[in-house]
Every structure is written in structure tokens, then in C-alpha cells.
Length: 90
Image (cartoon, rainbow, N blue to C red):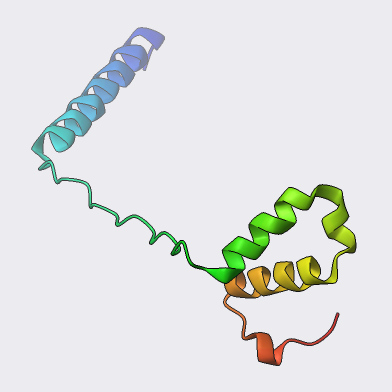
């Protein structure tokens, strides 16, 4: 088999694969994307949220505040889905 014949055969195989892929893509049915529900916003009367806001407004002083440290621990527990009663001191 000479070089010209190999090049032609390669081109034919490439075109055949491209046509097959195009036909498969065109035969797909368009399905609407599933609608994901938005996360539920925490209520405005959430005491943990209010305490986190207070600690945020304190700035660097919050790192020395025991209430803020406890609030951050509680927030981490809620986020990670851990039961605060079973937490061990680390």
C-alpha cells in the first residue's frame, strides 16, 4: 500500500466517523434541564445568624470573645451536620 492510498483510506475513515457522530447527535431528543430548587433561606429570626452578624461586626476582637468562638463552633456543627452533643474537644 503506497502513501497516497493510505492517506485516502484514512480520510474516508475520518469522514465516516464524523458523519456517524453527527447523525447520532442529530437523532438525540432535546430534554429540558431539570429545575433545581433554590436553597431555603434561613429565617430572619434565627438567633445563630444574628449572633454571627454581631461577631462579624466586631472584627478582630471577635477572635478573643468566648461567645463568638462558641457561635462559630455551633455554625460549623450545623454546616457539617454534626450533633453538637457528641462533639469532643479538639
